[in-house]
Length: 130
Image (cartoon, rainbow, N blue to C red; front, side, top):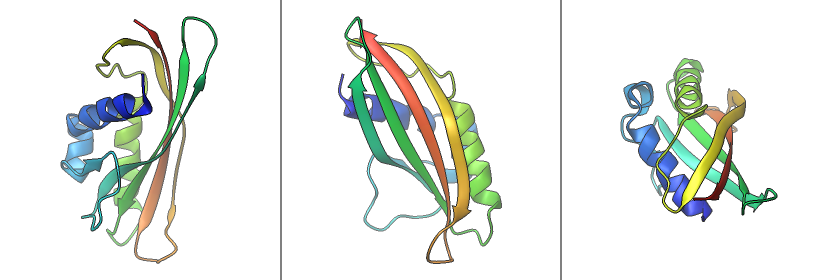
């Protein structure tokens, strides 16, 4: 399975998560839009590597939550919603079986432009042949 298939499944799942849509609406993207509307969630990094037997693959995804609310509250709420939606979730995959999906790390911080508050959510998924 490619990272793209997992990313697409995660985006669909987040767009259907009530807590995420309450903050970001449908602004959850697999790639950064040219002119984003805030708040939004973007998959900004993906990595995949072999994880041993059964054609297992470990996927590491970084999702960036961005807000221009004027403080960290909205970004914190969005990070919490994304984290809750992803941890132990079961997105629908084609031709692969999801072994697990975890969120081991999340952080919220001020952006360099001093207007944007950013949140990082790192997710780890392991898949194997179906």
